[in-house]
Image (tube, rainbow, N blue to C red; front, top):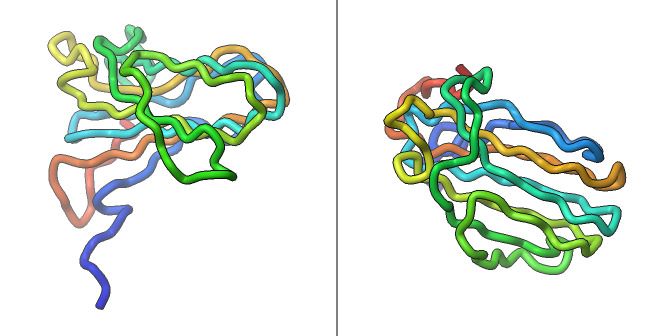
Length: 161
């Protein structure tokens, strides 16, 4: 018997930026966490060149990035250092940024975001994204955010506002 759960209704994934070569670095779209209990930013790095990749979690006051700055507090970080060899995630030191190793592997980094802890909500910062630092054109990056809404509805509120 099927379980009465839907990933799309309960944990809708939202692309922050599409897979692409990332030599100059880039910043994703900002997603609203106003109706959110928790969120996870997943960054996938297909590291084709032996260069590190800096990942930074940013907060803003709206979807256009008004007042963009680093998150207020360190967040839990999880790393899958070689997704072709293992599906295990290893906890890293909590921080506002993470730099991958230079090893040419397929990596997944997950930042675990609790809005009231990570964001400056008192000053209207309720949107979040991730940015990458400059690297190599041989490194492909992709980022999405997975949101755990504060309530379920037939049509959940959008986080792209």
